[in-house]
Length: 127
Length: 180
Image (tube, rainbow over all chains, first blue to last red; front, side, top):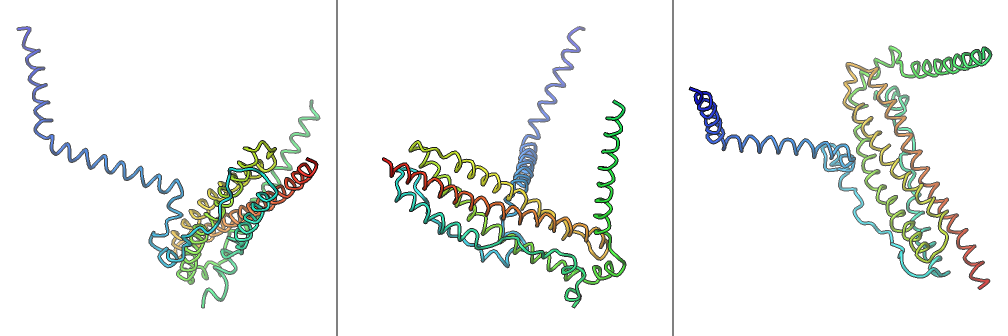
């Protein structure tokens, strides 16, 4: 009489094992889809949060400028090893002045293109 | 004790009044007149096209200028600092400026992201239905863009400061090596 509950729980346990065994292929497919979706969401969050999205000119709307990207870095490297002499300091100054001139030649993000008077309310906009 | 309470209370009242005046000014700037609202609605597509062009050209500028600002730090400043440090020269001034430059560069990257998001948010707003929100979003993006430009000017200042410090180091070096 006391063995009856044990037998029932064993039967339920075997039914449960049977369910997993019977549907294991679908469970595998479902789990794979869920895991891949989670990974896609994580990678998209990293893509947006890290700022990589802002540097990705292959996105829709950027094709017009994507061919204007400067791909070659023409700047020279100063060697971090070696002795310090008048010549090495002058060599550094020459490299630095060249690079500083290139860097400062463009006053990036200057102007005020978002000025409402020019952008929204001007007569030129309405023409 | 009572006097200090009165003083604190008076100071708070003055500060609150200034904040209130500032908020009212901002509110006045972001409120459109009926004529302006109509103009925004009728020019909506043209404005949006302009914004999309600006977004693309600014993105190109960010992509092209970013490596230039990076390389002056990694290829020149850091290398020169390493050379001086490995030769046991005092490079504290140069290290401090290049560290400030790195921080300013990081700030530029973050501020550009904030600006780009603000501009994208403005573009997403339907200006035919909600011109006031659209105008407010453009004002936000405009202020963020100004911050990005200030970051660029700060980077240029650091580049000049580093150059001056190198000149000072060179002067000291020549004086010391001349003595020896």
